[in-house]
Length: 101
Image (tube, rainbow, N blue to C red; front, side):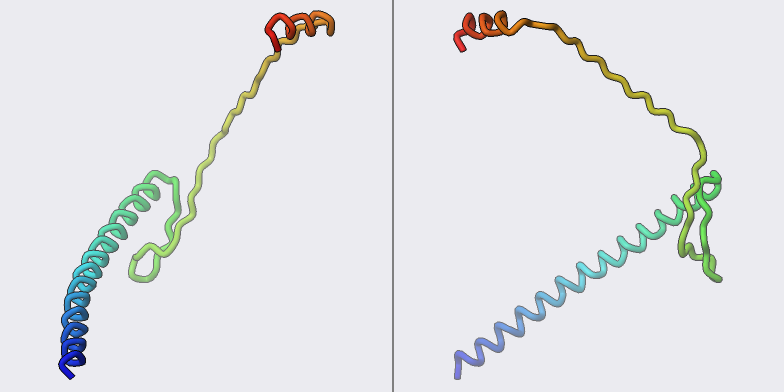
């Protein structure tokens, strides 16, 4: 009987400590998420003012979406070069033998 009571007391203490820990962590997460939403709103508003994005807003003025626009040109230059040298087969064999392979 004492073992069963100790088990319930230990479970209750563990649950209370865990609940406080997760409550505190959840509160911090909500605060950080609110700050990130505010920063995203600032960045998107700056993009809109520069003419780089069009924001979709709801009736309250909250940003619910955006369209990113950029016009311009992109140039890509690719190039390569290869040098080749003809080596007769008999000379190739001699080079291999001289190296010991």
